[in-house]
Length: 260
Length: 233
Image 1: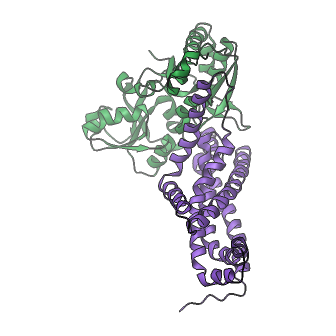
Image 2: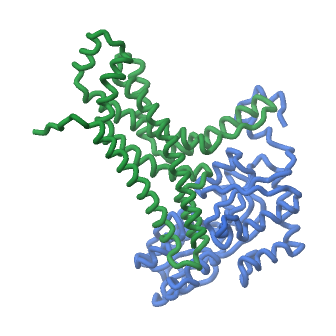
Image 3: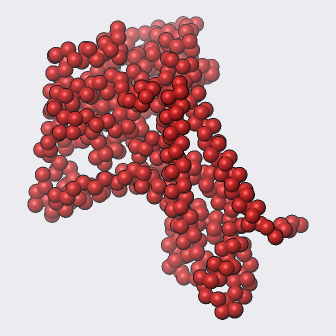
């Protein structure tokens, strides 16, 4: 709470120090429901998906009410910092860049990424065997970091897009040879659709920490240390009592999305 | 598929609400800016100049984020520094309307200024010579002719304004474009080409709204051009 001595401190100092010891009866959770099967809306407009159900389970564990706030991806972190909501539970990867602005719990899932290319291309998925190919990735994503850090150096032409759906559209339009994407995303969004029938995974699952971070976590403001502790414990609890597995089996059946 | 289309249709209401409300703000600011710019007070000219230059020079997206999120963060910090004040939340609808209105006010300023300058100065001088007060000159001489001269530019501004309402989804409001994106994501696997289909539907709705606007504004243009033959040589 507010301390009188802070009056003399700078406004910024006050803003970062005074947030503490709040009773979390209600947790406002930001989601961007454009990411099936993790965060999306049912036809009648209700938020659902793996992230949403996990959020609800976490709120139950800390005995708080979950209030979902829809927010566009580009404005996720600004909205958190402006206190429009208290957490982001929307498949946000824990990366060094984001850790400079916000705090994260430990991971609540961690899916690997993989390279996907057209069937007729002879490659083992290694950067050197993709030289000269054109690979589309989502801008600002962990996959883009990998593609720029490893593939581009081997002479692969890496192209960035604003949305993963646009990558698929451009593959369909014949302008790309493949993509690097999260396995769950690319399986449901592309490989299982008619457009993906001539495309296959190549190489091993990619989990290099330098590019892909430590998985997906719950983001909150750095000042809310009590909330981070509570949610970290809640993640452990839902892992231990089987709630996590039940939700994972419902939305992402057949794949282990906890990771190593 | 129908529920998704209905939700996008609902989003079009928000576009109209935000669009019309911002238009009011933009017209008021534009009128004030144009009068200031054509006045003979150096201070007023300078303020209006800075407004039109800065706002037209910064991307809408950047301004929107800066005013809404930056403004909220500043406000939060200020309230916390002042003590146990209840948090004040900037309302996203009001913020969106004010920001878009503020931005397009700058464009309206230039449109209205051009219209004022196109009226022969002698007419205003003559009116003054007849003893009319400045507001009478404006009301009786400048405004009626200005409307006719400003309408083409005004129509242009309005069309661009309506489309830029898609930016309010950044403030957490669910406009048509964002709802179309959500529907595209939710229906994938069920409906082929879902993203393109829903975006095309949103595009059609925009086109319907702009077409109606153009028709109404075209009719107004005709009405205000009555009795005037455009001379060309």
